[in-house]
Length: 102
Image (cartoon, rainbow, N blue to C red):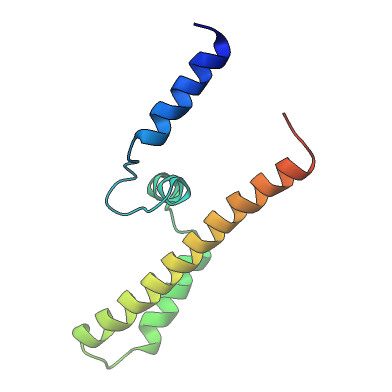
């Protein structure tokens, strides 16, 4: 089998497979973000202080009320960070194409 035929057979095989990105991803980029976040999800001192300030601002609210606010804030932050990660990778790929890196 020639290299060209092998390459085409491999492309056909990959195209015929249904990708499995896991339960919480819809693309390779989302899967990469999830792995990145899992191993780099350490909050720095500034983020920790921001959460302390948020809790202080909610003084007097019930635990259930605080949880609803914190859950919404964390979801917003996670979605914003994820969008930035995915857009950053996509932008880097576009830049590599424009400068024709090997």
